[in-house]
Image (cartoon, rainbow, N blue to C red; front, side, top):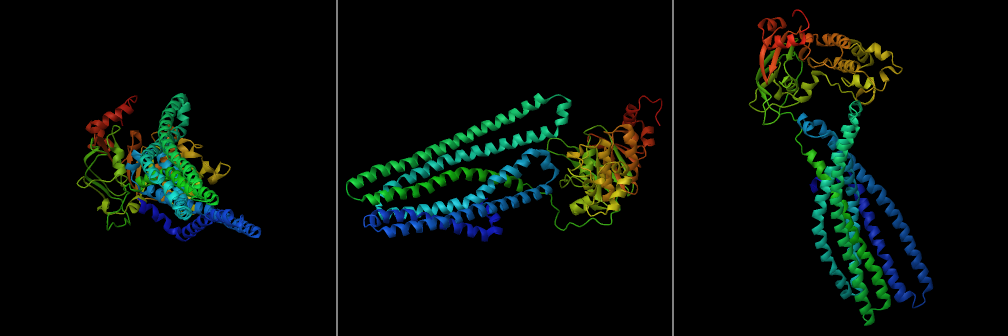
Length: 577
């Protein structure tokens, strides 16, 4: 993991080198004051070298001015390095998320994913910036101050240094507990974000059912979990800091007692004793900095670990030698296809279907029978295991085709329409971003939405709000259909595209869908059987199997499950057509 983290420094090697060089000079300048102090007390003041005293003071002032500029450089450019590393990690993570399969999103909440991208990576950024500087400045200061203290009195120095091993042992002991506690705290923070995301997204449902109190209770549970995790984290952190601070305080007690005895015995002069006290602060402060840095280190490591967890998720991949799907005719065939989302239940069982190019196949049956799963398998949103059958497009197994080329040739219209924040133009052009204005307008006209758009003050540049909240269900559906018209795929999947609409709106949208289906191989999932009577073939899917197949008339005549479903929907009619 360390090697992986360090790889993000590579694009910033030059700036990092300058940053560390500046940090080293900051450390060296820090040693000037005790040296000048020693000379002042032992030489310049006793010998009344007034001009030298002034010159020494001016030199120290100049060096401190230089150190101020170096600190500015380190603070500013060090943070810039950290932010750029954070940006690269965020982009890598976002790109990786785009390549992860449906299965990953089935098992991970949006709010938790957002936490990985935002707050977790912020802690990594802070570690990336402060880590090298703190380690370099503190290490150099410890070595230089220790060396200088040895030149004053090596016995006194070694007496004080005996506290360091104790400090290392205590730090090591509490570091593990603190790491575990901060890991739990991050997980709890992700739970809160997930709760907020879910609640805000569903705020209209909450208001409709007057369940604000229920949402507060759910949020409170997550918040209590976060508070408890924070309590554990801060308990570990408090033990860590209080113990290490006590040991650093012992340094001062040793100096006070040992230094006083050495001065009383005449082993060191008053000037050396005073210099020693000043110099010990230069030794203790970087030790304290390193101790404090451990907290930041644990936060950064926890964040980077969670970043790596997602980056290590297996993305969707093309097999070696995958070919592009081109000149698509649209013939589809499912051969002995079986599929299960987990080992507990098989969703599809040896399904065999063939759809000729340009034909429409309707899938009907009870919910949970496997209709939508069939539709998801065709564009490889879920991958078939070896030995679980084949899915062919124009006679070619889709496993051997590149994912992008498959999906570019498949258009999908679903019941739950998703529109992005932005304008109507943005959402229609999502079907083909390089389309011309004329092509976009033609797509909208074919989807029966252009006339409505032109009644809006800003036309195609009208902002639609989050998930198209400013539009009706029918308007959103027609925009999604315009998007598919613009994409112009050879294969079409309609997954209950009109089931959530009123009858009047359904008629308008069905007209658009009928035009959209012309010349395209189409799979339709429908609960409203009236919408699929004109399908070239209808397949009844129950418990993962195809139980009936035929035209509407043939299935009615057979008197099986399809006729029962049809009769249930049209039971008020005197006859079935």
